[in-house]
Length: 420
Image (cartoon, rainbow, N blue to C red; front, side):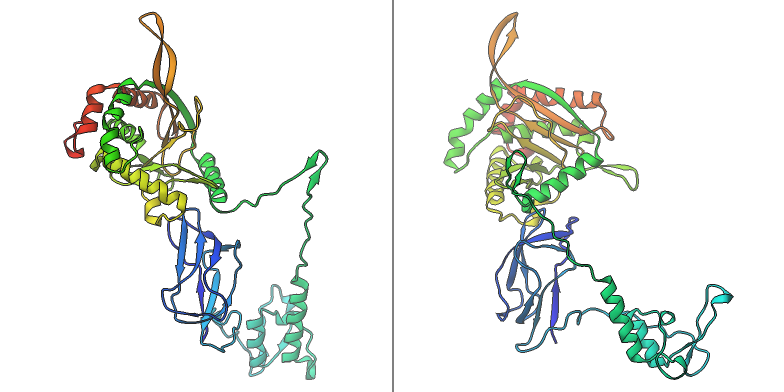
């Protein structure tokens, strides 16, 4: 018997996906757990394994189609079997209507003036119930006005025709009054990013706090480990050091490592620290999560960030790599800019944007001097965090990034021995 395979609920609130490509075609023989298709969700590209062994009788969606959770992807059966649409769907439970005799349906009227008898045998009543046809709306063609099966089928056909909606043709202009247009379909990561960003700004009360750190000591700390990192095959950036400083600040300001449970009206503080690292990919933004940052050294962090970024760009991340974040960091320093207002990775309550480290003119001892500084931009949910607490948090973060002793311990100690 043909069996339908529907787009499963893969968790994390995913409700739909886009079919990237089919790896099978109709008529192919497939084994259980063989990959049928690659489907892009708002989290990652996932492979859909076949739950059955058999022949692909029908593929129900095309590449680039958006499919919802529960929508039929493919029908699998034995070679030569025919596909009947809806064959695997459960039929509604049939409840017999009350009767006043062996061949007469008793109709419960809305008022006494509407009382009239509907003549139909039980077989016809059952057919009408399955077809969704109201017997009261049918004029019977049988003896004494009795409703026949043909009457029910005719009424069903008429109702279906009346419900049929003719496709509306929408003309998409290639030019407007001013010139030529290009239309780019909103698909894949870009579509997912748009939805997530809209959800965040429509829910959280965004406020952004700006600050700046003198990172001369941070530059020295990184330089002291670059050669050692290269020997391990690692590209050491400033980000692992920033993560260590951020972790220390979060432990003193735990509200920034939380979510807001709107339904139960509770602030849920996370006692673990998993940092999402935003990765720029050609068609949008992906945020893989570095787990348990407090248990990892500078080199551990550098290696994991490098591996996750490469997997994100190749779209080979596992769904587990995108779950469990408690705080997010977006680094746009490699591109440029002096300030940004990052959007919170909802349902988290804060996100930190780091800008480009470079020489900026500052006044020291009354004299203008060139200082290497790092602009920091913290967006937070004002429903959970007040502006004064955000300022205190940033003061602590800046202090850690400027503290040569803290950076030295972070650079040369194992994670469990670092005194934060």
